[in-house]
Image (cartoon, rainbow, N blue to C red; front, side, top):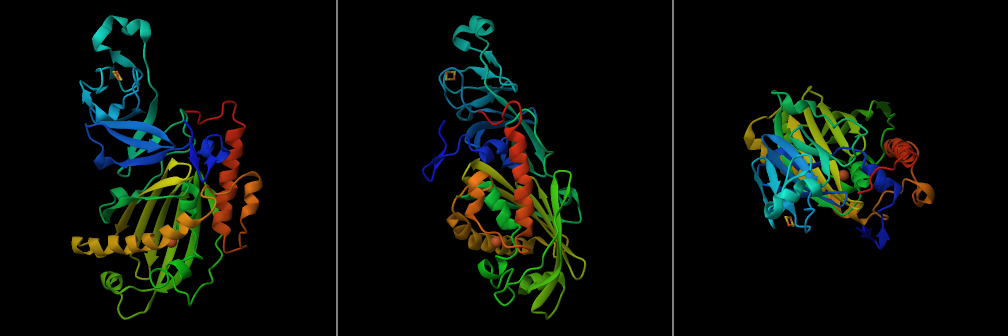
Length: 355
Ligand code: FES
Ligand SMILES: [Fe+2]
């Protein structure tokens, strides 16, 4: 299978290959039922379904004549191919060839099965037999004091590392989000010092003033201020998920959880949740979602304009960009870590990601 974009074939690119080592989000858990569905991760088509309550992920291609199992159905706890009725169990073993079942033992057909699990309302898949890091966590998901909102997925024509970096880049707020979460009047940013904890890159932004939007201020019970003070605590769960916990001056919290999924080297689907412990009445939901969507709409054209789309993390490509000391401290720490993961993957005895 050839993976092309911008005239480039990324199939052997070290960054693309390294991405195969991790858990990635592929669907919201509530969207996965007993009817098979297709998702795509790193150019691999995957059929997902819930079989006896458990989410199962197989390569979405029948070994017989290549039909997609996602067009078929689940029968007696197996995926049944829509074309000639071959059936596959959750390990990807063919357990029935209706036209000549006596040949099953001799032929032993099989298709790849992938690790799949559910966490924080999301189905995660890892294409590698040994996931490098744990599945990202989202503590507020099961905290009853928070109201949860599931954001509609959005696809951007960019790579997952670029999408992640955009989320943790503060110096774009003043320009891309002037009047919403930033202001051209305050373009300078504080320097943060990221540190690593397990598979997480953490950093804290001390309380910063940002423009206050009327309805959010009302929900928070903070009256009459044009600027509102908020402290931000970030956890980047390597490589493409981020949990941001914001604490307002009255101690209330607003949490954003975003997990980016590399559909291909240069196309990314983002899954996201909002959690809040103030203004928890459902009538505020539409406003909260709309606010975030406005912010995302502001980001999209700028991020999709970045060249090259696959973040330049390795080799000569690194020289294509000019980071700013201090202001880009987070993306520098992120790239440093990602580069280590790429090197580690390249030197592994059997390079992961050959699908
Ligand atoms: S293509 Fe699947 S059973 Fe024939
Ligand atoms: Fe942004």
